[in-house]
Length: 412
Image 1 (cartoon, rainbow, N blue to C red):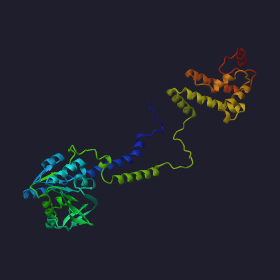
Image 2 (spheres, rainbow, N blue to C red):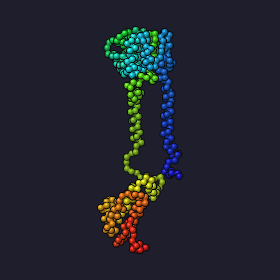
Image 3 (cartoon, rainbow, N blue to C red):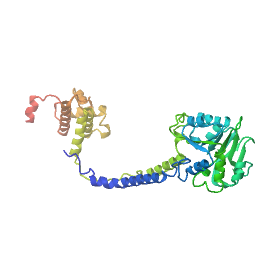
C-alpha cells in the first residue's frame, strides 16, 4: 500500500531542494582535490638529497660528492646516531618532529667530536639540542650580510638567511647573519671535545632553486662538507622513537588551525542567524490538503491502538465528555475537571442520590484494562451525554447499569 500523501514531497521536489547543496558540496570537493593535487608537489622531497624538486637538495648532495664528501640518508634517530662520529657531520632537517629523548641523543654527537647542523630549530627543539640558546620570532628570508668572524661565513659572503632568530645566553657562541639584532646562524661549541652544533634559522640555502644564488653554495658546502662523511637525517613516521607521548592532538594540528576554527565558528553563527526562524506573531497558513476532523480522530485512534495507550485514549474521551457535559448542568468549562463541582451537579440534574460513585468511576476512574472496556467507556460517556440532553426523569438508569423493564416499556 502506498503510504505517501498529497503533502509528501515528490522526487522532483526533493531534487530541486537538494541540488543546490549537492552542487556546492561537489564544487568544494573538486576544489579540495585540485588544491591537494597542485600542492602535493610543493613540499614533496623537501630537503631530501635525492629530490630534484625546487625545495629538494639533490644539487647539494652532488656538490658535496664532487668535493669527496659521502652523503648517507637516515630516517630514524637510532640510524643517525649509529652512523655519526668524530669524522661525521649530522644534518637534522626537521627537528620539531623529534621528542626530547631523540634530541638528547642527537646532542651527544657534538659532544663526541662531530658536527651537528640543525635546520629550523624552533622554541621546543632548540633547548633540547643546544644548551643556553633560545629561539625568537621569525623574519622573512632575504639576502643577509654575515657580520661575524666565522671563516665560513666570511668566505661565503651574503646568503639567503632569515627564518628563526636565536638568542644565545652567553658569549661563548659564534653568531652570524644578524637580522633585527639577533643572529640567524649560531655555532654552539660542545662543552668537551672539538664538536659543535650549528643552528641555521632557515633551510633556503640548501634548496635546489637557491643554491646558485649569492653565497648559498659556499656557505652550504662549508657547513656540511667540513668532514668526510655526512649523515642526512630525515625524520619519518617509521621512527619508533618518534611517538614519545610528549605531543598531543593539538600539537599535531597544522599551524593556523585555531584561527581557521574561529572563522568557521563565526561563519556558522552568522549562517544560523540568517536562516533561523524569526520571532513574531503567529501567521495562519492554509494547509496543502483538507483533513477532515473524522480522519484526524481516526488517525490518532490508530496511533493509540498501535502503542496500546488505552490510558491516554480514555483520558482524552473523559476530558472531552466532561467539557461537553459541564455547560449542560450549569458548570463552567474551567471547572469541568473538578469532581467536587461536576459530580454533584450531574447527580442533581439526573436525580441520582446513591449512584454518584458510578459517575465518578465513569468520568474520573482508572484506565480500562482492555480494548472492550475502552469501547464500553466510550458508549457509556455517549449515553450519559444523551441523557443530559433529554428532559430530566424521576429515576433514570445510571450509565453502565442494567435497564429495568419499566424503562424499556416507556422507551418503546
